[in-house]
Figure 1 (cartoon, rainbow, N blue to C red):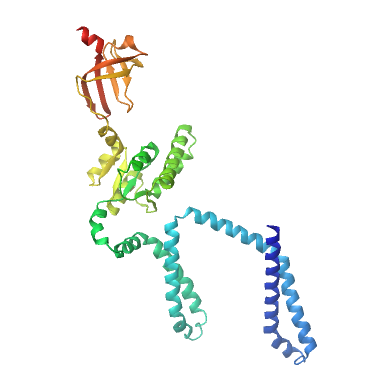
Figure 2: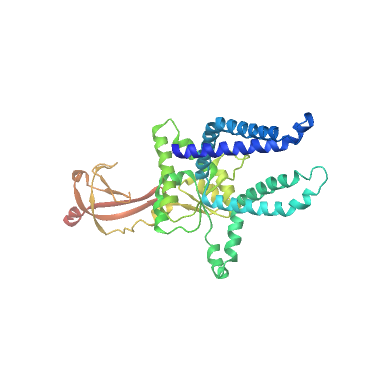
Length: 365
């Protein structure tokens, strides 16, 4: 690293010497006007040497600051670029190139404008380059769809893709964590959209002074990293915000309406509000209840009783999916695994409950 710094310092010194020489070349006519030095080779050579040495010396003395400043800028740029999705960087670069091409096509006509023609090409390059980059990033989704529509065979694939609406995640479903396993199973199609206001809420939770909230927030961020890095899913951060809306749930509904997408949540209240406004909701809890195995009265199963029930003589057990089993007369079997016979199944808004009796007692009857 020290060798590289020395080489860079030599290059900076050489550039300083060249700048000093150029200043001498431009300044020589002025020197000859204030003194009778025109044609004097000695004065010319001495002045040129002074210019080169002065420029090189100044550059040599400033080179440590220039090198350190350049390294700081490079490190900052790398950290900043790492936060930006690769797709945004590529789209922005393409927009910048298009903007510069248009600016250079206009450069010659603009340079012919009287008085200010010398500066207009520079202004056009800076302005159109920046404008092209910003527009490309803002319209990246439309550009992406346009490129895909131009690919061969897209006409047949279009109807199938039209059904894959974007899925917008809310804070509760991210913290819950089950969304990562559902994505891994392949039951969800389309892009996953993380609104910026949801990500900001998640960051606030992760920075909370409450230990439980802080752990939940950090778990949510870990789940997002897992989905983005380990799973083949397109995760997009949508920075759209609505200053006229205070509640995050209302912002989610508005964003889903504008994007024509679906909201992924396990929030019961958000579910109802979204449905009232015509937004489709995919509720993780409803999915979990739907995939639980069906148990019918009369079936037998082996359960492990772990605690007392609410009523006298009852024992409580749980299935692997969390379904509660209430066993009448199971209190004396707490701490043991016994075979039970299902007597009834109760479906509630909170989930499903199974009622049973010990199989041995049923036989005795």
